[in-house]
Image (cartoon, rainbow, N blue to C red; front, side):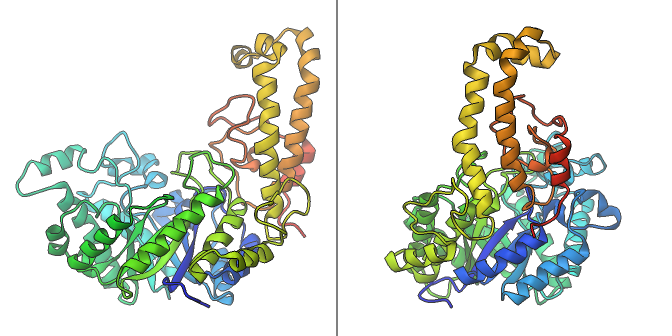
Length: 483
């Protein structure tokens, strides 16, 4: 199955912190993942894991149940996909530290993204999270502990005082927490190896890395989602990590979710170039260096941002990238294979604006997102910004105060209803694929439309809830998977 790929492990990243897929949708796409060349999945649970006990406050209202987690693992096994769970344990802790009961564990009191590494309760918190996740993943060979983008580390009051003492440094502070988390993993789960994003390690001098126990405890994941990688710089970084004592390294690319915080359609060419460049990196380092590659597919940049591309929207990009990795290039015969997998006649002419364009699971969702992004947005913009009746008598000022001249309703209502009907029709087709509403998005036709529409809500709402959808839409939103 590996063909000429230098990456023996090829993992698809499922980012569940935004529009997490229903289990029935996973049952459709796991076979496609495997057919395209994946042999594993990295599941970033965030608040979708069914935490219990004192951690129950972390779980989202629509979190997966334990039985659903077991079903996901069963589906992965049926499709020969190795599962690696991911739990953030240092940075990107917003879903944990946003809670008032845990706010005292923040590194900086104002910001919920980074954990205070000085408090024993902080380590107890993340190890308890790890233990609950491991209880449902008893056979995991790897466990990803996150640790990327630990912003504001060293800026908390306790850290400032600690850093004034010689020979303390921010690097030492960072490594000490990483070591504590990884040591817990190794001691309690000796057959499970921790993975860790590498960005916080990049600037730490080689002698400090080798002087810690981190290289003996973890396997770092070098991530870069750009279309033009610094190939020489990557080779030097790999060499530095090897000299520091890391036995194995991983790479991480992106098939979606890395080109804009509110990106709605995936720029496939960008992501293909990213993967072809990672193939060049792999070819320039010793063969026993990179254990595998993780194809990240970010749903949101962090817990508080809007959604970027939905998973079904990114499937064509994933197909292109996986096949390029599997075969070592993207020649004409590889492109033909991708077209066959997606059920389209030509990648160059790929258009999902019409019914039946593409036959992969979720192709109808890509069609509706394309329709909204390319057509509905312009209709709404035209209504809001260029219609003289709206700009003159139904401005944001009027909408905030719910004030309008009754005569103007006669001029505005027909076009507004046409936009509403078009959006409602598109939304109905998308409700069935994703699992839960995103309460931080102001939507036009009800919260179950998720973050598909962060750019087009004519009411300009932020985190406030929109008015309820009409009864027919609400009834449709309560249905489960398509039959």
